[in-house]
Figure 1 (spheres, rainbow, N blue to C red):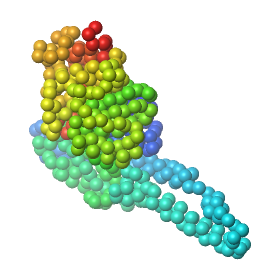
Figure 2 (tube, rainbow, N blue to C red):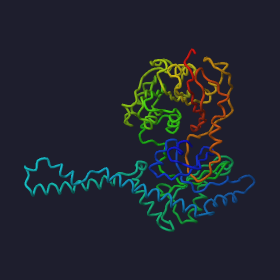
Figure 3 (cartoon, one colour):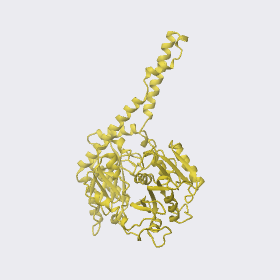
Length: 473
């Protein structure tokens, strides 16, 4: 929610159950810059959930088909907006490619270093030959330069041309499509995603005359049905935004890494440390967004550090981020020398902590200067341990107990766009503070924010702390 407001000047921002809905006038180039979003969709419809209790399957199928048959103009309008976005993006790509290429004649003239050694006719032939080759080369390069999101399947330009051509047809009967469906809650107990996709697909073919293509469609339709809403949308990009082109080996989910870095209030000239950096995903995301910073990553695992270096090299950041092989409990840094600490605390599935979470936090607390920020990704067990004052090995200023407040589930992963109101946004942001009154300080570290996030089958917490005073005071 914060990112779309700041980066896209979004309005009518609303959070509901793992999705962020918003309106914006931004073009595709700006939308591509979203870092906290897993995927981005152009909204077609958002309705109340389908009722499945004491209703026959046939009636429910009819309700599903109404997502298509009721208000077909909303579908055609969304297709038109989607087509215009792709068309405008293709034009901008062509202009940028022309600006990036040097003038042909200047290159041809500069290529001839010693004209006195050549006859006039030879000079003309050589120049014409080089100009022809250069022009051909420029044409080939322009044709080869597609959008980076499409490089796994076909060039974006070719894809956009196909889509625009198909969508320009008033009947749009040349469009091919595929339906992707996700069901959860009560409806998932009655229907499979395949059944829902088939019903929606048949309705689309009857209503618009589109043809189904499961392998390489012009258009993908996304349906999400649960107990809260029924959502229909078009993925703006074929490849998810979370698939970073600059990350060679994936570790922590990139959206979570960026969200953690964005909470850390990184400023130019700061000293940022990840004392358990693993493959370096957090540092990569931070360095891409905030480049004028001194970054250090530490880890005890040779294999993790090698993987991190490969990632840094692939991203061209090997000179921006320093890697150290050290233990998180024995950091070779002076006390109060670090401005920001961001770290994904191992959950214990692949890598064991070896020591208690509080011993690790003590060393982080030591090297962090007063006013500095710590942002941690914690599993439920770590989060509970930090709230348990009675068993704490770190002096606490007040007693606390585990909180029942879950914070915001996936609040840091805005995914979709729509024109809904902003009624939920303020209350959802406030709920992130719900458990803070129950969260005690950990030594000099005072809790600032806490969000619950989903890592697939695993739930975790992003917790932010600020150091309030020097140790011993």
